[in-house]
Amino acid sequence: MNSKRLLGLVLTLVLTTTLLGGCVRPMPTPTLIIHPKPNLNINQAIYEMLGCKPDSACATKGTELAALGCEHLLPPDSLLGGLSPSYPIAQCVWTLETKPAGLFSTSCGKGYSFGLAVLRDGQYQLAASVADLRALYAPIESEDEALSFAILGTGFDPAYYEGLRPEGKAGYPGLVFLTEQLEDTHVTKSEDVYTVRLYDTEGCGCSSHPTSAQDVLVTADGHISISSQGRVFELETVICWD
Image (cartoon, rainbow, N blue to C red):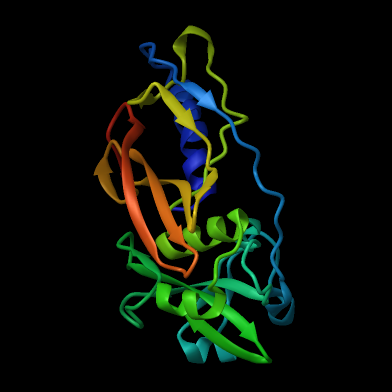
């Protein structure tokens, strides 16, 4: 689930509650620990060459990327701009039925896999595993690069809560918080290991769609491990998402 959908979850629930006119019981309000969002940008040459429109998915039919198995490009994500070298890149999506392997996947709808298209020395490459990413970008040499690497290697979402404000005594309508502190995405370094705080939301099916904090450990040589920090919030009611 991407970060826009994660933060959009709050707005959607507030709007739904307002429209339904329902009474919402007060929820505990967590302490927000705010970290600045990195000011990053990716090399968008791939999007420009394909004539993709900003902020929308882009089909690759009839291109070299399609021949590699990439069916669509996701809109540019600036938080991938920490990767070095700064090759032109684009996030690829394809259905599981056509090419099952990927950096991560979702079973929603038809089921989709995700990878990274890279233009290197005039040739397209499709990174469909952490080993592929490692071959392209290791060693990982900065907090920003670790952030980008962790997002791509796991499919977890970065989240920045600076604009999140409680609605008086009602707190955050529609949400049940399961933690006393909610901390933004950030990166810490200890020796040769970067710890990246990301979030993962259970996004398919009918449930309260809990969101969990995940600490992604990225080593300097490009290996990833995950330490779950538990659920932080969920919906107050059950909602079905395809």
